[in-house]
Image 1: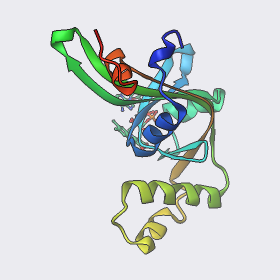
Image 2: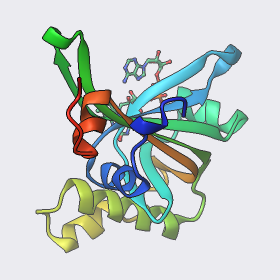
Image 3: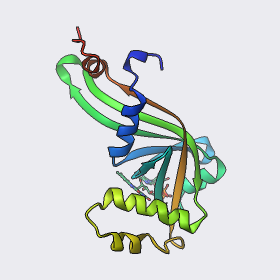
Length: 164
Ligand SMILES: Cc1cc2nc3c(=O)[nH]c(=O)nc-3n(C[C@H](O)[C@H](O)[C@H](O)COP(=O)(O)OP(=O)(O)OC[C@H]3O[C@@H](n4cnc5c(N)ncnc54)[C@H](O)[C@@H]3O)c2cc1C
């Protein structure tokens, strides 16, 4: 990263991956157009999981190239008087695959259900995550590299330095 003083520590990047509820998955789409599509996700142990229908633009793209990135905006606070925005974001790079094992798919769907429906009963989450492979696909993104960056004012606050 060019402005290394604005880099987020790895632990902060992981915290953002745990608490954020959406990001934008970038794939190499048809005709070499990048395709960036917003998705819900869950992070666990250097993997991100996404669920979707079994057909569509992003799955076609993934079948031709597994290399992806996933960007999350954690904070975006415009500060007009400073002509800036107080931002914080994370980008994950890695390889994405459509899960073929129904048991692994179920485990990933349960993780998504625990994250997005924490008040639901375990029995209902189990029911919603079972036997879905005829109509739901689950994508596993194996993380290779993570970067996080925040605006100069937030970076200065983190270091306890007043921005001039
Ligand atoms: C915050 C958020 C969370 C989401 N979470 C999920 C999720 O967890 N699972 C899921 O399957 N979908 C989710 N969606 C919807 C998702 O963005 C896609 O619309 C969906 O996954 C279909 O993608 P596809 O590539 O199969 O599109 P296709 O159905 O193949 O789309 C055809 C075309 O429609 C356009 N298009 C598709 N999606 C969008 C979009 N979101 N905005 C603008 N144009 C679009 C593109 O031009 C694309 O080429 C979410 C959307 C948002 C905003």
